[in-house]
Length: 68
Image: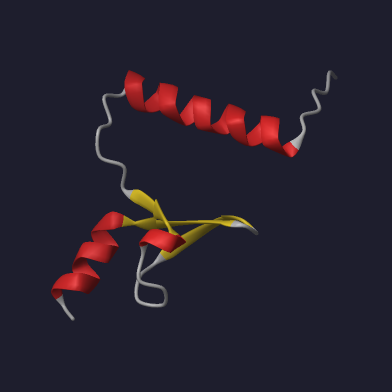
């Protein structure tokens, strides 16, 4: 078995590049996920990707905003 080790910064840069390529390949224009800083904390569903990274669906934000 071969193992490739990456520093955290290189790992996240690789993930960003993969996501960008997948978006381009699948013609995804609108991203349905935003960061916690862009959202209304406590009012929407979110996914915890990593202990430091949470993603929140934009349709959840729009729903929360329209029902305030």
